[in-house]
Image (cartoon, rainbow, N blue to C red; front, side):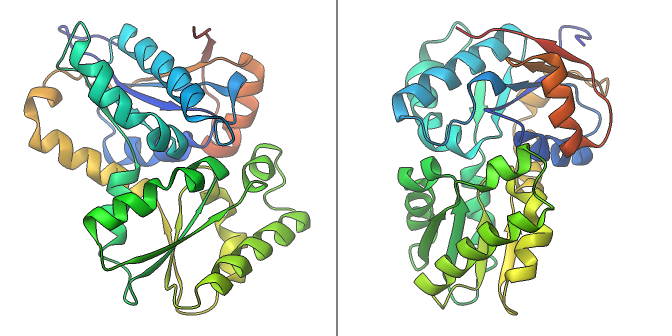
Length: 278
């Protein structure tokens, strides 16, 4: 996957949900090569401390750099919330190749949200880690200070997806509970952001409990569009990327486990290699 000294784009997630982001990116930018790394053995990151999430995320980023990726996308809200800024400010400037880049998914999501809401009241559905980090509230305050943000932690949603229960009747209870909570906290919300990459698989359930007039916003399309725009604005990076339309998958879990769960997100068989991170 290295033609003429060019290299793939790295995509990292703590688990499987980043595959929803990867699919949107690859759909919009199919010619590029990709390496997807899931730290599935140590997931979920959502309940871990800032220090641990930073440590684990940095290990994954460095591994993708070792795989030759000059550009890494953190397709994980928790990693973007708890680790991205430190990696960008502290680790990249002293790396052996200062032209490497690491991008997250919170900023492009916030930029898109600012163009959608009419009432200027936004709801954020996310893991406990993303909500407690306050990252969406902070980013929205910077880019759209007139907006009011209400967060709702949905700790059961990821396990529902990864245990293939996202279409079950039992999922309705937790989805209905969290939707009711956030809309009760701020009845003026007209836009709900799915700020976890697992949550798009619950969209049919979520829409079932949404009142009319509330827009459901998923990240994948805007993250893919943001990456396309970034590469157009940075031809020096685009020129370093290989374009064979190939993709490799790496996991810290067993190959069998990753392949089984990834099929929920990708609907096709894939080849996976098991790695360790330290």
